[in-house]
Amino acid sequence: MVLAMLCAVRYGAAQDTPLLSGGVGFLTRTNGGSTSYTPIIEPLLAAPIGNHFLVESRAALTESFAPNGGGQPGYDHSHFIGLTYLQGDYLATRHLTIVGGSFITPFGTYNERLSPLWIGNLQDGPLIASLGAMGTGTGVGGELRGSAISRHKYSIDYVGYFSARSGNEQFNSERSTGGRASLYLPDSRLEVGVSYGRLLQGTQENFYGTHVWWEPKNTALRIRSEFARGHHAQGYWIEADYRTQAFGGLDSWIGRIEPVFRIQQTFRRDTVVSDGLPLVNTQRADFGLDYNLPHNTRILTSYSRQFSSTGNNNIWETGIVYRFLFPAWKGK
Image 1 (spheres, one colour):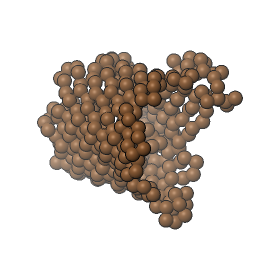
Image 2 (image 1 turned 90 degrees about the vertical axis):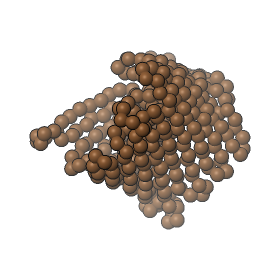
Image 3 (image 1 turned 135 degrees about the vertical axis):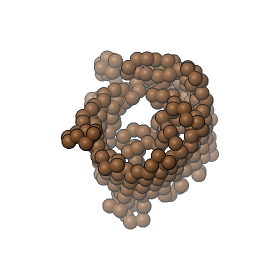
Image 4 (image 1 turned 60 degrees about the vertical axis):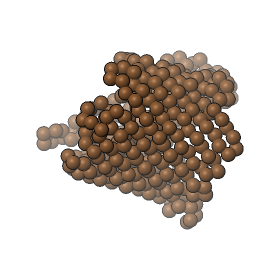
């Protein structure tokens, strides 16, 4: 489908040239003395067709090397190749975009905004990332989204979706519906929002969420947080990262240093396993130190300490990530 779409727009105007973006990384993770290695590529395609249509997709290609179990020497190897999503967007009006295809479930903010390899400050996602994601984290169906109101002092955006049940190996999804609404105050650089999701197959469940993002003016401080509640568990995460501008700006060698801290907790409401969260109440603190090299390259390092009644453990992670962006071909 992607190749056919590229051929269809090959001779479009320069402003309609498809963009190839994404990230390439090499990640390591040490948990309980066992170290795994993961090279990964996440390419992203954004291809406009005329003034109102856009096709976008993201894929993941990973190789994983982990120590053999049972004390056996050597490493076990596995790989994965698949599409994260593939959707078509129709820009109907200034306030409405119609989306169809396989899309990331719009619950909360992490999965849509921070999960790409080249964006997240930490390798691991929050423990509650699967709450409201409806199993696979993607839906197959349609969305209505856009900016409901846009004023100088505030703006309100929205998204509502419906997903059908799909057993396709590549585009697997559960029957569900839901949406999200957010209020943004540009003077304060503050965003607050709420999310709702309902699983419509099997044991029907409701999911509720809220998020707060704050980026104070004239600073490089960012504070992000989410709370999510499902039928079987609930939890929250708060993440802060900072880059100083006091020693020559963000492009100085000191300004490129980015400390990161995230605190998170999950709470079980019952012992039914259906949401991907830990089976017991869990607390975790993540301490990261990233370095932003020139040419969109980042070095990620972090130490995490996880506490629960089943035992405490340390997690060490390092990685290097490069973000690329270029047109699919030279525009005229």
